[in-house]
Image 1 (cartoon, rainbow, N blue to C red):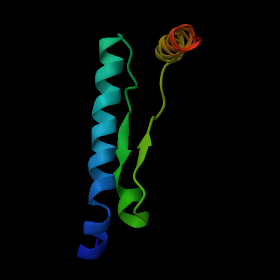
Image 2 (image 1 turned 180 degrees about the horizontal axis):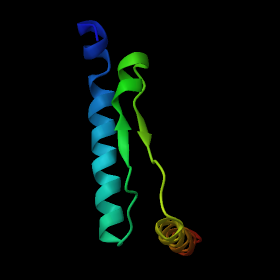
Image 3 (image 1 turned 90 degrees about the vertical axis):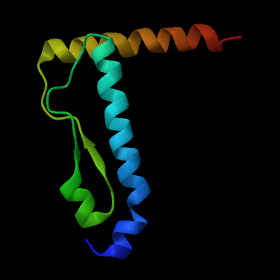
Image 4 (image 1 turned 180 degrees about the vertical axis):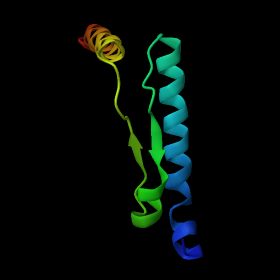
Length: 82
């Protein structure tokens, strides 16, 4: 990667790593996981756009994540319907 591109994408790389860490932590706290969760560093080096690859997961893991999202949406609706 050229140094100019490296400097231009430094914040995107930091953000991708931070989001990956936050997502992994939140899922672990909830007892859920995505075993193949990672940043696609190679794609980012080629394009300057860093993607989070969620990867394949077992249906039971995804059911837990869907359940958490539903509960979060219900909570958000209850607390924001003032």
